[in-house]
Each structure stands twice: as structure tokens, then as C-alpha cells.
Amino acid sequence: MKLNLKKLSTDDGRMIYDMLQEIESNDNGFHNAVKGMSYEECKIWLRKNADMSEGIGLKEWMVPQTSYWMFIGEMPVGYGRIRHFLNDNLEANSGHIGYAIPSSHRGKGYGNELLALLLKECDKLKISTVQIGANKNNERSNKVIVNNAGILVKETCTKNIYLIYRLL
Image (tube, rainbow, N blue to C red; front, side, top):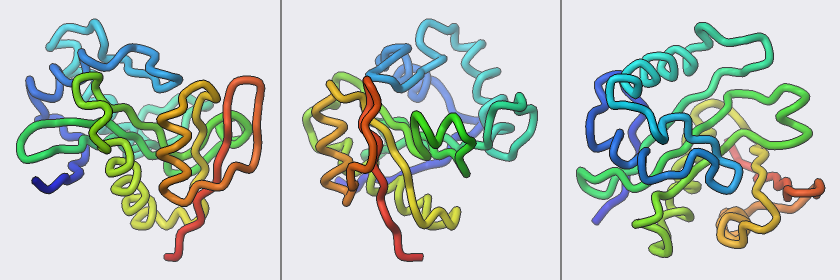
């Protein structure tokens, strides 16, 4: 079955909410604010994140970012975010892309597929050098990044920082 990526929408419903409840609030450094929220709170969160994609309502330390869901058929199996550009803090400690796979869908190669699809979205955003960070102890994410042409360029106390060069 083919995997595809869909941009977050304010119309997203219960299946997205249920998937987000399966991802920890801090999943190896990936922040999932929806974990533990009510469905009604999630709908408000969707609106805020749709605005965030357009740069609306951002605090001064934030940058625009777009959230995506990866689907196999009609079932969501992954969550990713792309920051449109990096500020000094993000450049020093993180990167453009964050992603998570719900625990029930791990070990199936979806992380590799999700990152590959997110990189194609980076191309559309004209991000030619994509930076991505992974916790040092997260072997799966480090492997996924390397499998997608990631080059380790920096190490902090807790993170590996990679660059992925894209031909636009």
C-alpha cells in the first residue's frame, strides 16, 4: 500500500487525534503537545498549528512550521513537522524537521518513508540544506537520517546534528 503525506488541516478528525494520543508528549525529543488533551482541545490546537504554518500568532522566538500526517491508505501512521527556516537557537540545537511514528507502527520502515516525504516538502519550501537533529541515544532516528543522506556535522551533549543537501 502506498504511503502519502497530507498537510495538517483544521478539518482533521478523530483518527488524527487517536494517533497523537499514541505518541508520547516527549518522544525522544519530539514534542507532542496533544498527548493528554481532550478532542475539543485538539481542535483548537489544530487551528493554532494551521496559523503557525502561515506565520500567524508566533511568539518572537518561534519560526513558521508546517505539520504533516503520513497515511497508509486512510490510516495515519506518522507525524512530521518542517520549520520553514532556523533561528540561532534552532540552528545550534535542532533543525528543520521533526517526526514521530506511533509505537504501534514502529519497526515497519515508516520512519525512513516519512523523512523521505518530508524532504520532498522541504524541496517545495526551497530549503536546499536541511538540518535535522536526533537524540544520541535514539539509534533508530540516527539510522533513518543517515539512510536519507544525512551527514553528521555536529554533536552536542545529547544530540547529533545532521545536514542533508538537496538539489532544487
